[in-house]
Amino acid sequence: MNPLFNRIKKNLKQLKPYLKKHDLSCYRIFDWDMPEYPLCIDVYEDMVHVAEYKTKHPLDEQSYQTWIETCRLTIQEVFTLNDDKIFIKHRERQKGNKQYEKFSEEKQMHIVHENNLKFLVNMSDYLDTGLFLDHRITRKKFKEESKDKHVLNLFAYTGAFSVYAAAGGAMKITTVDLSNTYLQWAQDNFKLNDFSISNHEFLKADVKEWIKTGKDEQYDLVILDPPTVSKSKMSRSNFDIQSDHPELIHHVLRQMKKGGILYFSNNFREFQFNTKRIQAASITDISEETIPEDFRNKKIHACWKIIK
Image 1 (tube, rainbow, N blue to C red):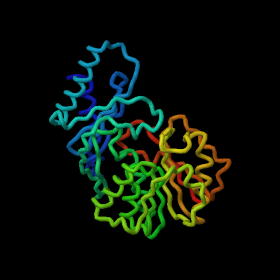
Image 2: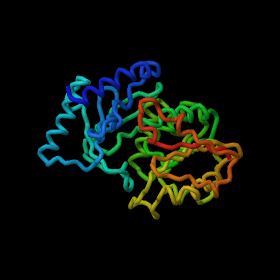
Image 3: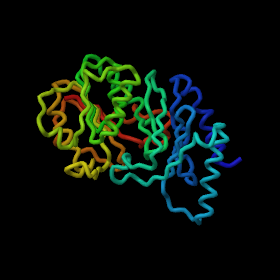
Image 4: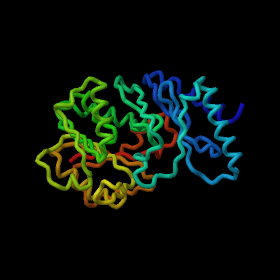
């Protein structure tokens, strides 16, 4: 058997108790575990999503096509799947707002499950599926803090954190994103779980500008998970996580009640947290405890719990 087959089978065996214990049907099974296979392979129930990272390799085009097809056939064999259940994307290191990049117009939405909640994923049309699996633990923490709280979800993407907050009994949830597509997706996720959207807000806005305006609202609980950089045509200004995070967090905290909790996360590998402009009661790095066991790459994200 080829090395990829053997490694995936080995990972499945090692992860089986963890997956069973937490009743997981969506998880990462291969995390670029071997240099010669620059792949991240995620299982979404009866489907497999493969992200191939662009690297320098010595293969000519024909050899490369043979290699990638062999990878596909290997995954097919391991999971006994039909070809139409495997989705392979080719991605570069994050540059710009890549999660908004479109690959196709199939518009096929699939329902998957996580912690007794349901989410719509799109396996084909975008670089990402609509549900970031590495934040599974962070979402659960967020849910546990949500009861009777006024919650704010910034750079909300498809609203998974908002769904968790609704499941946790949040009083009101404000979901903010610049994309109409993702805001509608978030509302569809609410409806899929039989949560009313009438008591909550879904706002199309440039978060960097919107948070500066001094809202009348005061939030108890906030999730702030920005992209590394954003150069969207819809935005009035560019965004860079490294240079912009102190001001952004400063403005978020201004809109929070004393004792409120802010979860701040990002996936920029070289990120340096500048706390000089951040006035908070406490800032705790919770990265290690929020990265799931199925992610062998422990730099998949960094996360802090900030209490005002």
